[in-house]
Image 1 (tube, helix red, strand yellow):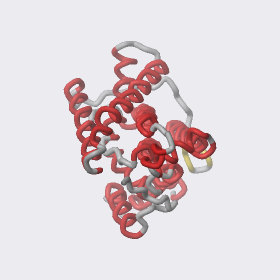
Image 2 (cartoon, rainbow, N blue to C red):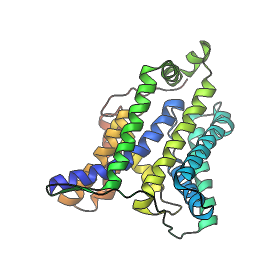
Image 3 (cartoon, rainbow, N blue to C red):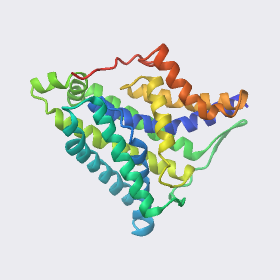
Length: 289
């Protein structure tokens, strides 16, 4: 039973990991936690639904168009909204992300209402059975996507000249600008990449939760707990944190009380911020000056 709980928890945690990864990419660009991220994920999933069901596009084409639109939206949001608030407080930028998220949520409510709609994906993966443990195909796909994206961005940030510039922007935007790096360009690019990956996460999540305007709100809390546990700004920390949150939820809910499934993320955030604010992987939090 414990083995199945761990596997099922890790499968759920893979979803948290993918969302936390997309949030971490944005954080690496601007040291801003995008508290409207759940609504961007919802928007990406609904765009794929609109293009496949309403417009009749093939699924892969709809996914490509949707991720491209979210990427462009990320660029626009950073250039015209986030960047314009840089002269104010950091809190003002965070409030901007929340406001834009609520705007997207309201638009989805106007168009689709509170009805739950289904997004049917073209793939069907058979579950893997190892003894008494069952690993669903969807969970395996989500975990694989999270792993591949993490590896890709890890290599980009640590093994390429482009990654070194991104690291410089993350560590000291002022210093990066002084040596000729276009801080604005790199920050906007990471916003675009983060929202594009969030859109992919929304599409992969849709078959498990179905589509409704508030589908991303709960994920936001789980992703934030994952980032806090793993370490803000650390890509592997986001993935490991997501997996651990999912496992802790399952095990605590089964062996202690089912109410802990909802409480665990809050407990993780409180304990980590009090005991080890840098998270498990010890990523130093950078303060902008």
